Length: 150
Image (tube, rainbow, N blue to C red; front, top):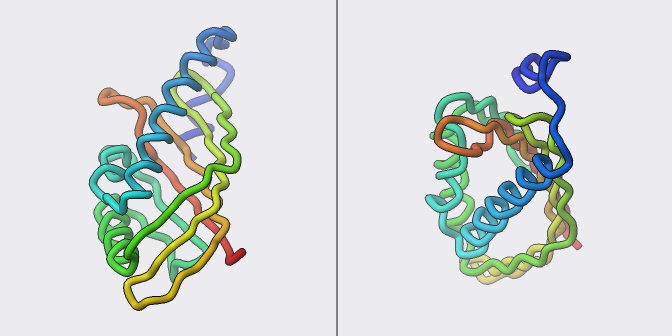
């Protein structure tokens, strides 16, 4: 996998302040992503998906892994079109800076969704992101999601 092949023993160790700065940048991006998701705005979320090295997306509710940015955006748009409103409560975010170029983020949140067909639901949603520092900034190269009703 790209993440681990790029982070061998030749990567210089990061200082505590460098790790803190990267974590701050990533947390700002995560906030923007989830603000877009709460508003059901696919394009605000999609801007953070890598166009260069998107490795894929897998979710417990998807029938198969999604292996392209375009397919993920289309799938997300289809899911969002079934929702009238969505509220997100942050539960926990853990940022693990792997190197100057790679970060792992684990995030758990509660979702309150009002669907267009009239039903409502409360869910716990968990996601793991791998971010890569590309020339255009931090981008998601892999995403796993899972969840269940509360």
